[in-house]
Length: 332
Image 1: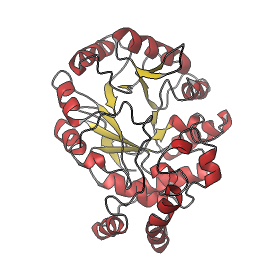
Image 2: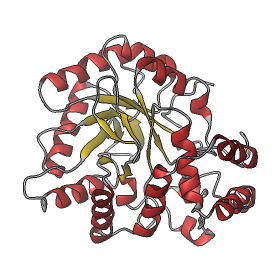
Image 3: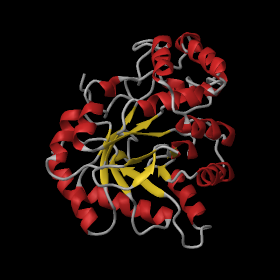
């Protein structure tokens, strides 16, 4: 299994992790047993990095991880990452962001309680709150390390300029961003900044929310997903176009005798030694395909052929809807 350092002087971990947003209901119904099966499969494969958030199912993902850890007899077999910073107005339900020290630490404490932990290995600010300068937020996160509540910290969906400002205050272990063959924005500065600073780029949705797989979402699966049903790449018309446009990758995978998801993972990990991938899935069979992708060593000519078949800009529709796009920092 390919391994890399997660952040400056960070631990050496397998380049593939588990995205635990799929332990909540974003992509369809989930069960505790099904999520535990994914964690068992990860342990069997030697995969240790598990990424969650306080808002995934409003604590459900963390509770599921906590119930699994409770069966481990005092052992913590995973490198756990969680996040805070997204909040809801209690009266209107409107989505907002809070990077205040009080909010971040209170939410971290709740996360630790849900998972039965004294410390998490990696704590992200899930979205930037522009009311708080990133330097001040970084200084506060460093105090959480000093308190022993977190081992390292990072930021999700920030611009390269923000990363450089934060890193000037304290080393930043990781930046989390969507990156795949269908979402290429990190190539325009973020990957380069991570490489220069020794920061890991943790790529979520590296299989394009299943578009880059042998079983792309059906209209029925999209309708059952809280997230996909409003996403511009999966609405009627765009979904059909994107399935057709990504078919050349499935054809190539068939020629190579591997799963399409395996090729998608292998391509992402080959783009930089700074990159980790955290795909989510509710299927142990699909998880095996993801593991196989992290074990591939694609030749340069295969990587070039993948790029020819899915060139930059092939995907129909924006990455996020107008509502989903509130929070991530634009930088290109």
